[in-house]
Length: 354
Ligand code: NCD
Image 1 (cartoon, protein in one colour):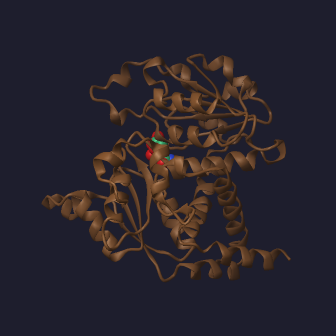
Image 2 (image 1 turned 90 degrees about the vertical axis):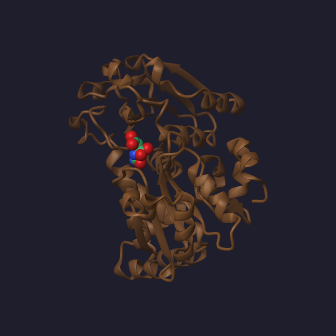
């Protein structure tokens, strides 16, 4: 990227997106703005094919051989259970050997090394860096920095600050697509986001991806202080997408095709300000199930606190545990795309289904 960092940083996400592509495909996976509809359709198809292939021992061994000559660094400088393990398992599915740094207190960052130098070290040993970091845009900075070194490797953003969580959004799209397969797809559906939309990065990334599906209406339900950012609304306006913001959860429950609940992200509080907010109206209780359409779905990126009553888990419309499983397949498919191994998967799949 022959643009200095200050200039690069000032670009809008859409302007940055082309810098993360090579030969018409993503090289890094950093922001939702990189992913357009043909890519999303392809990723979902590849995830399903990989999943199908993995049903037999022969298929699993075939997949494990695809990237067995490569290594991945999972650098997670922020708490994570699902995303970390999901990537770990995805690496194992495609044979990529994973290594991890999860606690910067055990790395040379404690000796005063900059995170940039740490990651540059990883790039000397590994073929892809999968990273989560509390600073928004930090994964982009790393990709920018590495691209100006002799050993650039792909960087996958596994969550950056309050800003983006593109691979969560990809697995959410996969879940929506599978759920609405018999209802004409994601097009034209009403997707309702609830909770801490100001600081929830999964919603910010998913909202952008939904612009790729004509006719989708996005509804943002939150207390004023936690409402979705103006930049997201500007993107919706520019795209001519339908949307509305409200704090009246009750009235939208029966209208929703998908309800996407989120947790209050109080780790970002400076002075326990979210504890003072009344968030009791932004929870999905067992009583709401009766008001939810029979063909609607209930989603959550997890971890949950009490935004969704545990009693809802057994309802067939509850998708959050499926999201977890879908995430592993989507991430495996994403890795295969980044390493350009789609053709082999397609060939194996075609033989299998012939
Ligand atoms: C989310 C995250 O880390 O942004 N979790 C996840 O990766 N599935 C949501 C959250 O922490 O609330």
